[in-house]
Length: 120
Image 1: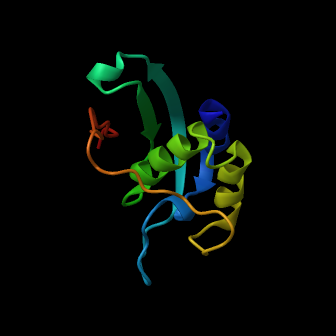
Image 2: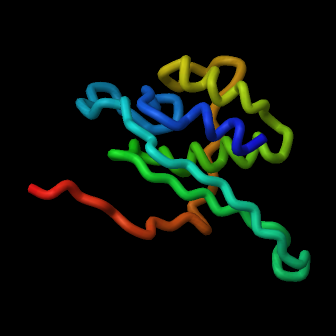
Image 3: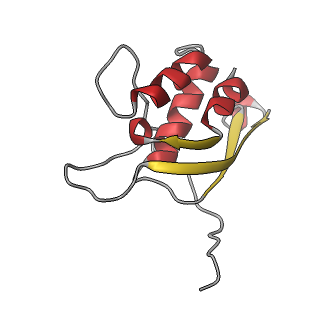
């Protein structure tokens, strides 16, 4: 279910539903999410249980965008949201307080591994 939900996010979309934009913020919420992979690693419950690794690559990110994508995908994986809810959030183009909303994951466990920059 998480991979199906993630497939809705690949490509160029308005990610305002998955980030924080303040009034008057000049940054464009349209981003190109080139890659979004989900890997589940099973481990012993005594070691904390299963883990999910989410790998993303985009031209740029909104503030809290990966926390909100990650949290929302985990909720889909837990059965608390449907994969189609992710598409509904994208189409909303903002945090409208509608019937579904993105869920922000805690910062613990999230890390940025690498940044790519275009040659100047």
